[in-house]
Image: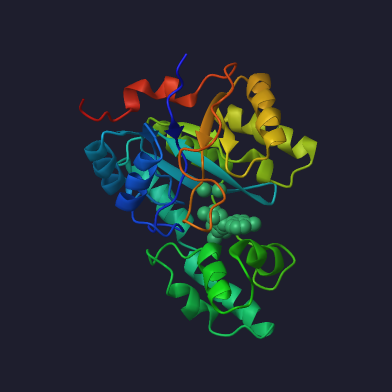
Length: 287
Ligand code: AMP
Ligand code: MN
Ligand code: MN
Ligand code: MN
């Protein structure tokens, strides 16, 4: 059976990617993507542009976003796919989730100033494409530009993660709220890159069971953040919990992202792709 090349996770400059939605659509298409979704963090501002560009290129489209959630004190990302982008409750929930980012960024800059890195708020601002969506990634790009670190991964390791000077704990949306916003807008909620979270096995089990209890239906099995072993491990998790499976590169920027759009291995044949349950939500390019 031919599995379509679906890439249902990536970021434009409407959040913390560097390409416009249009340039990203072109890049996805050039790399063979047949079904695409732009999933900017906590934000739908790029959806119309992404959809129009995708359909013009002959690529099918699903609406998307990646919601920041705090679960058991840890930040978890929930991807939403195939929802109605005009849904009021979803838009209000995302606006509330975005609202603390500016103040958090000021505090991050204060933390960095204490270790001698000055001007980080203004520096990060230069990389921001959307004033409501300043993220750690924009700080990372500024610190690379300033020569503090060789690449953005090194910045996260030494400055922007827990226990380091630029890290500021933040309360994001609640898991149940994020799943409900997506579902009630007609979409499917997906646990993004589960291998990235530092949960104990008990906490991870609680994440999956509570997610399902709230109506979550899918897990990202194939993602640029997973190792080959994690691809297998979370394929098993999808089966164990009866979840649909998703595939997405989490592409942010040429040169920064390890995984190119459309280039992950196919989902293992034993899994049910999330897009099979979203057939009526796909916005199709005309033949
Ligand atoms: P924020 O929403 O401001 O907390 O920023 C989270 C974003 O930072 C993620 O979506 C990734 O794009 C990026 N990120 C997180 N951890 C790392 C890492 N270790 N290396 C590179 N980028 C990272
Ligand atoms: Mn990101
Ligand atoms: Mn993420
Ligand atoms: Mn992402």
